[in-house]
Length: 258
Length: 75
Image: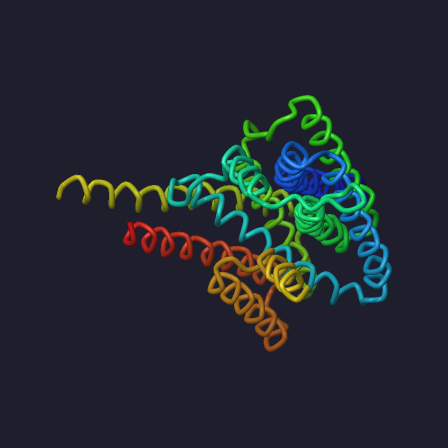
């Protein structure tokens, strides 16, 4: 197998893991910032550190277990999960892009979270506020599980992809933490829906590829066919925005005519 | 504790399933492509790939169209 055959999978694994992790880290950072701003940084960072410890334990426990699964079965299961995951993101990004669903608003989430945290009673124990710690813990754990799934799933189908996907997630994590420290407020200017659209396209294409491999489909050009799958998924996503947009426009015209 | 576990399980399920009908349709389509490959091994593998890809895309677009119509009807 030559470099030209495996380069698409490596590039898509890095990009997919980077973009998806970036979006997840931004969402977690909003909650941690809210907790830190309202209830203090000690509790926010304690919750974050605990969640990261649980995530590391999960990955260390489940990662080696995956190597015991036969390759074909693993490709099929991971492919199906990636397909469901990617299509879910793509569908939501399409509906948001067409104005059918409201856009994800980090500023609004930050305001609502800080308001809730201000209302909650302060019950500090050993210098740590349990409500604040649990809020940060839950947010980082839930978003972190998504990152761990993306990294493991994107890498599980092919040999040598794990370091690439992990590097993508790590770069995204460092970038978001650095931006959060510098800006010190929610990263609301990140074009989250565009990123989610791109992730949906990449992960769905990966899902079709691995699910196909798991079913026994020999894709022409091996990993190179990933590029064709991405182009088709991108076209489908753009067509989806047009379809949903035309539905919204038709309804708007009907409402105006009344 | 049970509440937290339920939340985490719900979030995990939510990773893959947002609109249940989309998830079910995709899984059924993949199973149908797999079953066809088993029952008719003479069919070209590239054809199965094309069917898997374009079937999944069609399921997504039909779902988007249906969801958009339902959402706009509610407004």
